[in-house]
Length: 73
Picture 1: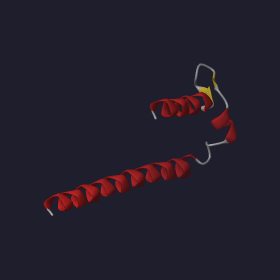
Picture 2: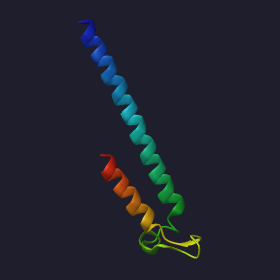
Picture 3: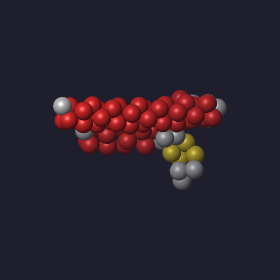
Picture 4: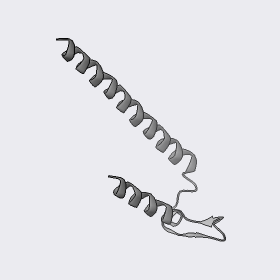
């Protein structure tokens, strides 16, 4: 009985932590899209940086992040 109760508590804490993390991620993404909607263009997302990385896009960073996630899983 005691082990079952501890299991429920751990499950609840894990569920709360997961919900909190999902909330933070959604909040950050919504904030980025609302505040950056004028700057988030297709060119910005698909071009490479130019002019000494002071202009251009972020495509290599997106691809690099994708491959890091794939390798780490």
